[in-house]
Image (cartoon, rainbow, N blue to C red; front, side, top):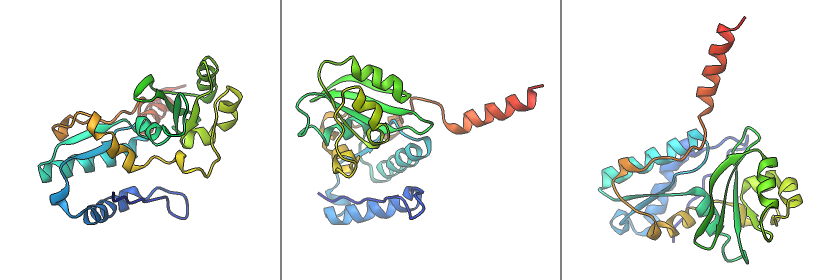
Length: 210
C-alpha cells in the first residue's frame, strides 16, 4: 500500500491543484511503477466544486493516457469504510459542505441507509434524532457540527482521531465493489450548484433590481 497526502498550506488554503500530480507520481513509484497499476479510482463526492473537478478531471486524463479503467467511489462511503471496524451499528459520514451546511450519508456495513444528502446542521440533527440507536459520526463535518450531532444522540470521536480523515486507501478498498469503465462516464456528485453560478445570479439580480 502506497499513499500520499497533500494537506493545506500554512494559511489553510488547499494545495491539491499544485500537489496532486506530484503525490500521484510518488505513490505510483512506491507501488512499483505504472506496470503494477490495473485500475484507477477517484472519489466523486459530494464535495466542493473545485476539488471534485480537479480530482475527477485528473483521474480521467490519467486513465485515458494509460488505457486503464476508472471507477468512481462515493467520498462519503469511503469515509464510512474507514470507521466500520469502530462502529457497532450505523456510521454517519459527514463532510463540511461550507455555507453552514453538511454533506452526509448513513451506512451500516455495506448497506447505504441514507443516500448522500446536503443540508444545514439542524436538519441533519433532526434526522439523527429519529434513528434507533446512536450512530458513530465521522468526518470534518462531524467535528464542525459536533454540538448539534451529539445533542441529537450521535457519537463523535475526538477531533484529532484519524477516523475523521478521508483516506485514498479507503477509496481504493471500494474499487472491487464499484463498476470500473470508460473514464468519460465518471461524473462528480455535487448535490448543489457551484458557488460561481450563485454569485452570477446574485450579481445579475442586483443589476436588474430597483
